[in-house]
Length: 215
Image 1 (cartoon, rainbow, N blue to C red):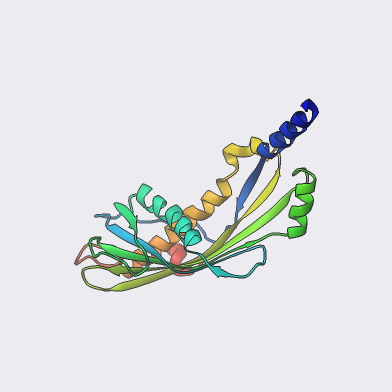
Image 2 (cartoon, helix red, strand yellow):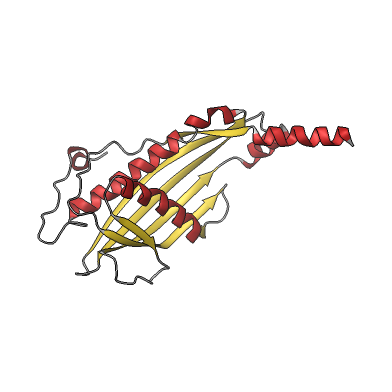
């Protein structure tokens, strides 16, 4: 009995000791984003968002879209781009917010199933990798005027999962966060440059040098 308990405890320790390290895809260059005069309140939802993992069939996934939306919009709120955001079901905007925002696009996670199997058999001593790519579009609608604006970005990040990478925990999500930061800034800037989120009567923001010249 004690022997089995010891073995189970060892397996649990190995599982808990696993971790990952992420690296940004780096497809989006840094941009300068203007500070809004009057950050709006928005209602946000997820439209057609497709999610694929490990080469499996692409399926519509509201949950994956909501997770991505939350990552981007919490950055918008932290940076002062918006005052607040609230999720509503698709096509269920209430009209109470300043702007309606809809996410569409896809998320694709590519990883070798064979590598995952061997990694599992070695209790994660052998690493495996997951490459996640995003192709994301936003549509912003002015609730008062009905004007619509659109923006889109594509980027991703790489993750390596291995035993004892748990010790890299303070830096493990750095690549992921860098990708989310870049996507958030580019999406917001594209919308602002078209005139979205501007107070009534304001002129659209002039394109930044990096946006005008392309990435």
